[in-house]
Image (tube, rainbow, N blue to C red; front, side, top):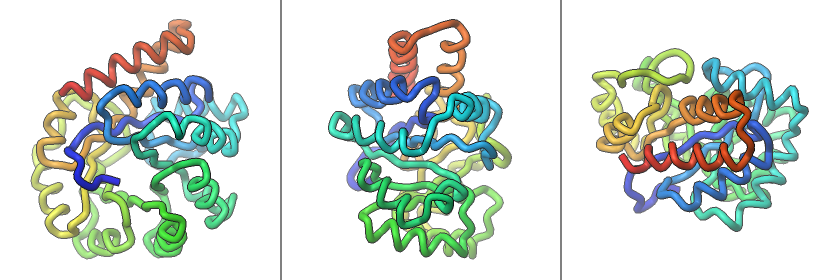
Length: 256
């Protein structure tokens, strides 16, 4: 999923926000930009580490009655139009409610390339990893700044895609500057595990993307993009205006 690719941007989208058609249009639009992949978040009523911006988006989507099946159907409809990897980010509650095997099968059939289940326990992760691997999907795992070294190694043994390094403690959200020791942590993680490392949480500006891509395998931007969408929705913007403005913002991020 990251083989032979230069570091780059991985945008995050809240699936179905502000509409499932807008998400589809954004995915198609992103295919015209030099991004490396997209994380697509499945709305959940009790997000684990998402800050207020993404929580609000998820709440709005759920209030509209979006179903998991609609997300899978939408991805299947755009898959032939997008060449970049698509990673499904879903709470363990969603995965286990549907059933691990069925969720993985539906993700594969829809056209996803990988999974991130941020709240799955390390003890439960091997079963999901094995199921995903059998379906040809990658399972990426999260590592925080406070994760002990021995646990990092155990997480890396389960992961089959990339490691998602959480740059700061706390929830997702836009921040003015990145931690001063981020480079050192990522370098140690890459050397100790041998896996690609993407960095997320707090990355919101072109200079952040440029800095992170100087030492990591990619930068994940979520809250800043969802915030941009929220502002456009609040201003009464329709699908075309949202897609145009968000693509412009993502182009600025990739231009870094």
